[in-house]
Image 1 (cartoon, rainbow, N blue to C red):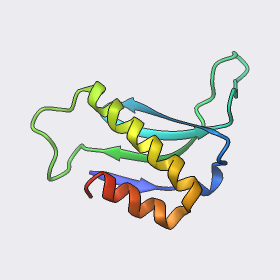
Image 2: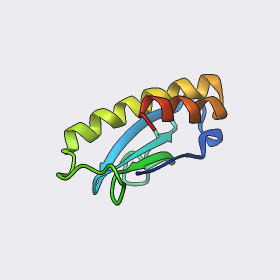
Image 3: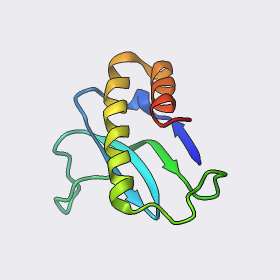
Image 4: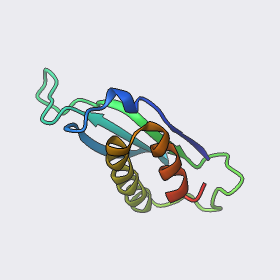
Amino acid sequence: MSYDVRNLFFIRSDWEIYSTVKDGVIIVRGRPRDSLDTNREPIDGHEITRLDWKGHLYAPAVPLHDDILRLIGRRMCDLVRDALATGYVQAQLDIKKALGL
């Protein structure tokens, strides 16, 4: 499993924190609220963290369903929001502990 928290210092506490699932990888991003591109679509935002199960020793035999990954992603978003209040180093520890790493 690949895991990292980065770019937390780019994110402001009033930004929207959200997660997406792409090819079995959970990606947590942050963007200014109501930020749109030229086509009036929400921008992607800055990647804060990602969780990738592929190639990990404890990878499940059957890939996790996207709904389960979305639930994990929502929890990761909550942890990132908490991290914005407590700081970067504590964020690393809290997220690793919550994910059982």
